[in-house]
Image (cartoon, rainbow, N blue to C red; front, side, top):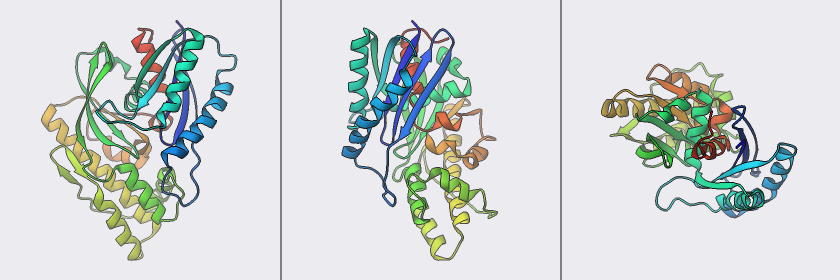
Length: 314
């Protein structure tokens, strides 16, 4: 077998990826869903509509001349937990199943969260962790999740993923976008907020709220609103927001290491592409960070999932 296609139609990004088992190389393409200026997000009905338009266009350009597809994998839901469902993933599922049927290829369903973890492992050059019988920690931090996960290699499903910690209220990506919108940035706000933050020379005392292995992030929004009302600069407000998130993830990491012992920690998800947060976490543990293109939503891990299931990963 050679070419493994992955498809991911998440809430804000249409993504396709190919893994070539003969060369070990990955190629990918993605396109953000359009969000109107000033809007705080996108409705699922609109997400389905845009994926339906974008996915055929991406695949037509991306797959042209690439060769025969041996296996197709797709994200069927956000996470492998009861009740995890978003209609936008149906677009990727329908397309993947049709392509697989037309090509006579194997077809595998996995989860968006699994894709993030595998893409991060690929980017960090730590796919070897899948061949160990030891667990590792993974963080999936994005607009919809602030999850701390205990991951254990599993022959049948690649990884057994157990959530051991999360945000009890606001998610980190939601905090970034809400603060960004307060500052007049366009949604999604992550990259723009980071650009503001690095211009700040402010020094902040961050006191994250950690409850066991969980956290609370609801205070960020109010604290940042108070800073804006008090006349603090946009740069200082942005930096405080990101340092608060970084301090929270650091606190969760240390709490997990205390309970489960030292182990590798993999950081994935769009929020973890932020360099300020990475700098705060690097000294804390045996940590690994995906490159930004593998941190944000992508289909690379989904393509790799099929290759692993077919025992074709170099």
